[in-house]
Length: 315
Image 1: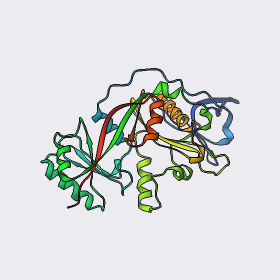
Image 2: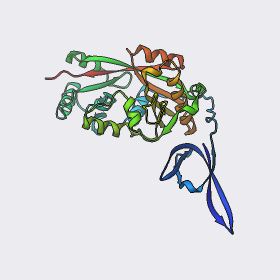
Image 3: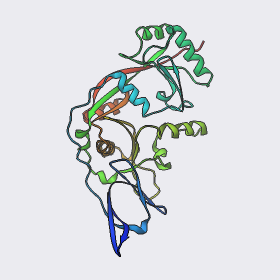
Image 4: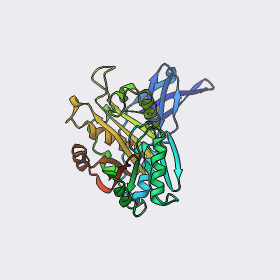
């Protein structure tokens, strides 16, 4: 939106200021607009002079930034920060009351500072103390040589996840009805009602809210329902970290599928990321999620690498 407000009166003459950005809220507290700089502008409603919708930011076409699998995994972790984190040498232990494997697994990048069998025993004990199973995030290249073999000897089952990349400019151009998408810095009750990973457990929900809102620059997208107060038709989440934007939590209500809403949500989020200077987008998707993989193929995402979650046996 482009919003004009009364800034001050000088010598009896009004002085106006404009703000162009995301209209995050308009309520009894006034209006809040988030411009490209990222610093929110809030002012009372009675100072509003005019406002209008403006087109999406035209993302510039640029090649994908160079990045290694290890760097991408660290960027993804920064955008999905666990409630509790603790180093184990070069590894990072992460726990969030069981909310998602990414926030409840050890990121095994680099050297744990001890032999691998001892490191895995330490991982197992750390998670057991929190009432959680021990998961290990194995990245190749990135994780220590021999870790996969050690996990196989432990009897750990491996679950593959693909990391896929796409240029933001091409993705941002795919929005069919961008005006249908609402962006916010927070996930409200409606957004959470469509997010399938939130349970009725109070501890898990607290952890989920903390993880979801953590990260360097977080945005939540929603396509509102047909009537006020109805659950959203589609949602998505974005974190921006320098040149990279990470997409996640893209969900569409069953009755609203096959209408291009997932594409539109991701396109609007891509445009927002481009406004903040990002050039490349990535996401993590389970290798067995055929429907999601087909969507990301159509959107131009290609596979960077595959990592695995290994669940440690209990001894």
